[in-house]
Amino acid sequence: MLTIDSYQFRADMIPVRSGSLLLIQGSKGMLGCGYLSVEAAERLGDALAIVTGVKSYEDMLKAEVKKVSSAAALLGVKEGMSGKEALLIMK
Image (cartoon, rainbow, N blue to C red):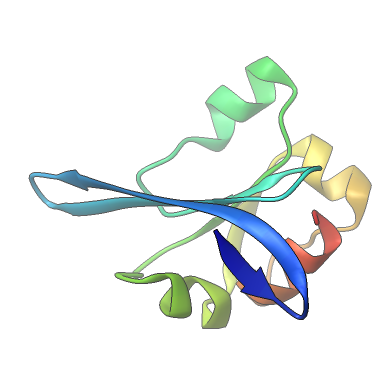
């Protein structure tokens, strides 16, 4: 679990050959590293925001959102906002 501004999020780090797959989940959507696919989220109707060049949860919170699924956009998540801002929308 990861706490951000008193909200609880599930945080997962999966080791892969090239580093780690990082994912932080709120009740309405997810913030993921560049290893994940917005296209897959689109097909499934999931709210997903992608940040790139990250190696830790702290990096994810500071990084700029690069891609957003339609479901995340409907919640108010936008490219250019920080990962933390996106997660607080998807809490």
